[in-house]
Length: 213
Length: 330
Picture 1 (spheres, rainbow over the protein chains, first blue to last red):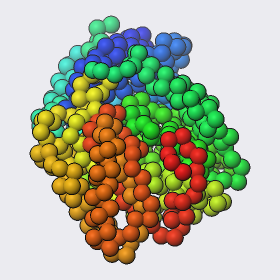
Picture 2: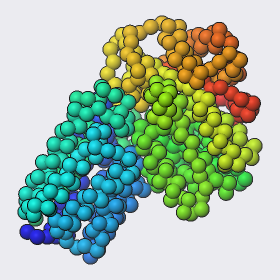
Picture 3: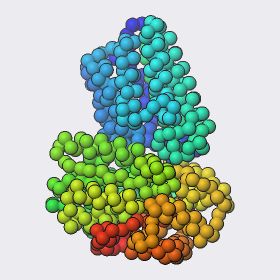
Picture 4: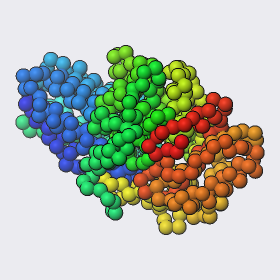
């Protein structure tokens, strides 16, 4: 497999979004010990908008357009801290795949690097601060390694999802330096970061489905 | 969970519907999530906007009205309003003299309002932002930029409302506003969490005989968890920490807000005020104006906060300026 089709990407994004919407309560529960129990609600509000935007996507348009319209919809309607972060990430990533109707491995690297860059830019966040960035950052690093060593798509997906999972699980031992949970200081240690968990579920569902098609 | 709501997803919308209808002589609701002072925007006056998550009644929308806020962007419970809502709120307050966005120091609010202001600048709407960070418990004084905004936002809105009415320009208002924020210090304590309507769970866990000093008004943990104390004992601890933070000194004139966090009775709040006033007097600090009541709550959280603002002559005029806001006494 050299390319992933537009159809597969659209369907996988849809599935990723459905998974997020279905896990509203789980994300609220993760947010209870270190936040204010509403991460699931924010995800739900943000990604309901995304689901609608994907449904309205004109299949003749390129994939850059898809990510751009998702990003714009989130920025305008998402709210919470989620909205600007995911919105900027989708919009920045759209530029990396402008004009494309299918994606190869390098395109995926460019897409997710720009996605990661958007979160970094808007949230002014670094690795190790107990955020969604701790999931996306090792995920992108793993894709880069796979591209460099010319892994098959299946291997790239398996390695990058594994790296994202480790990144997410690593937030458990971290002290939060961002957002409401940072107010807990050391008391934030021992709890998974809800933002890293929702990011993981989106990446995992999306990546595992692109190779199923 | 014991709450009088219908569906969780409809609660903000239904609340805004009731609020705007009950107070239709003072406010209007031009958008689903934007409430404005009736008649806003006013020509020749800087527009005053705030916004943020819901769950703090009477904040934020209770401060709409003549002499106070022109427009409020309303988010979900404890979650920032979207860029679209922020843009609509700013536009609705712009009478041509620019808009001052006065919000608490929370990342979601800063990002959404910041992006909205950037986009509106392209449309030619001038705006400035004042970020309130009065909660002394949330970071040391050397890291003021990390402090949360709590009930100190109210005194800022009050003084800026006067300046806007007296025709001050955006630049002047931003300067005075930043000074008001700097002169304002707050500290709270809570013994009972609020119940999050999303999960039906408490916003934090705490023992029956405990309270947490420095709790934020979204249930953010504070600086110290202690056993329950008498009103005077806890008020003395709070006053000690607040007074040294600015520091407030002999001869200063201050405004005082003793604010209930939701389920603490006015009876208790007045006992606390009595001690606050005595402490200030003992320190040679004069109370110019005081407010006691539920002004910035965390739904049904049990606890209170004390906010002191060191006033100069301009600020004193602001404090005395008559207003007609929905939920704040003139």
